[in-house]
Amino acid sequence: MSFFGPRDAETSLPCPACGAPLHIERSCHEVRMRCPACGTQFPLKDFIGNADDAMERFLENVYCDRI
Ligand SMILES: [Zn+2]
Image 1: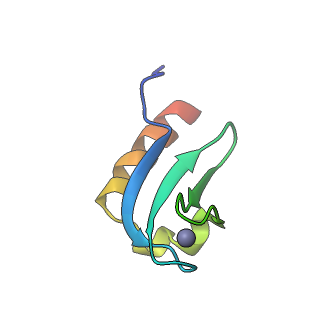
Image 2 (image 1 turned 45 degrees about the horizontal axis):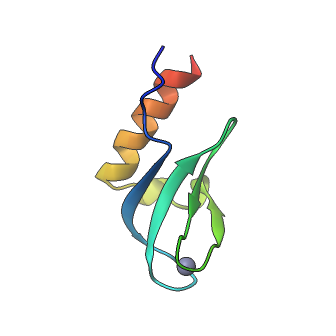
């Protein structure tokens, strides 16, 4: 079991509301996208089709931890 995966990572996807780079973050039970500039949160599923390298690396860690 790993406790060292990041809980938050910057992605290259722009915020739909303001255009700032979105962050991907996880809480206890879910992963979501959050914009640090305007504070808006978005469901991951809205972006999963456009996942960039940062998101894919982050999700690999998340799925390992879920087991
Ligand atoms: Zn924003």
